[in-house]
Length: 595
Image (tube, rainbow, N blue to C red; front, side, top):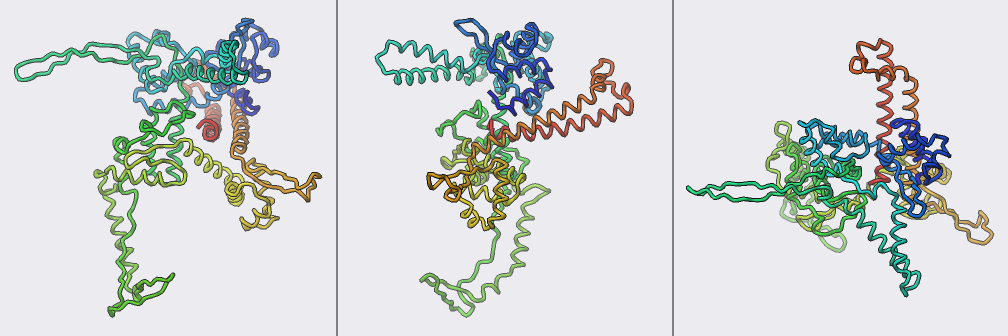
């Protein structure tokens, strides 16, 4: 069950995209849990025929999942809030497809899949013209191979909780006559159930899932002198199964979005050139990772070589000269001008000191030499030696990433590297949360949060001493952090009477609790922004209904007067601003929930 702010956001999304009927049906399931169609009609007051029509459309988009009870044969419906929230990702998914494919037909195919939820390929290809059917089928095959689209299983339309309970009941019944203890039976049945669940859903991760082998005979001719040797070879070509049911793979979109987020963090922390190298390295993992929750083992198959990163780099980015070597300085003399050295004792040892060393060093000349070196690196606005980029230059940027305290990269050996996504995202979440706290509460509360996170549970006296802040000022900053949900207070009584004077009050930071509180506030803000956008549309409902007329579409300049054009322009500007804010908040949600 989703939390109340998340459920309210899902209601607003459904009301905007699919209408009030879909919103009412899903809201009833949100409020009462799993229900039959009869129960939904009874609790919502909607006729049974309308409820059934809405359920068909909602299952088509997987906004509802179902389960058939084996004993009573009753069909129960559950909410699937993850698919409802994913409606907000429609624009970014289409942008990703446009960036990946040059053919606009690919984006059109994905757009149709987003509108209809899922479709059988034979039905979709049959709806296209005969001249375009082969092209569309080829594009869908490429989309499935890149995992942007993926075939669906029948179990994905069912409740995972009930599916788990059915497996557990089957294995528990098989062990009924066993001589094992009851606890041992439960442990064995649980292990078998989890294995069956993995086997059921892991089939989606196979590269050939939903694909068929199209074996074709290909004849090749090899000329050798005056003879022609003909060899008959068989080439296996993968094609999509037309009976497969496909849908948009949001999990692959999240994998790509996580890679882009990590690259943006590297760009802020280190630089653009290093971020470009890191982005290319992360792209090598896109074909190896199916979802963000997948844990990669640190084995040779999970490592990425320097050569793989080097081959795909954009030559227009100056990577070679991004890391500037240290400036050259005149070598200091170790002997005095008169040939004798002056010895100075430091820590029980003697070193040679030149009294006129500072006079001999010309700072202006050194700076001029450094300027000349920097100027020599630039030729026509590009770094000198851009064509001479080597793997050693790429390795320097990888070394920077490996040396970062944020664990962006792990060095396996001189030529292989591994990305610990869990560790990298842990530090990236902490950095993002600190930035949010700084913007909301200020620099001093953010510094106090870092101290509390580093020291653990601390009292006010200790915190005042470490942070060098007076107690009166400290309480106000701690109150801001507590109201924001960043820190909590723990009371430890020294006696049974729990007197306030004999109680320790310790401040502490729980990351998981703080992140959940932030998600709660983010959902509330998104819901208010979305509701405001719907209100603005309702204010211009007459104008929007006029725009839906067939004679007005594409001819707005001809059929709209000056005031209507002004109102339409103002409405589009408000929608653009509100949607931009919603998508910015969605990035926070993905960082703390999905990545």
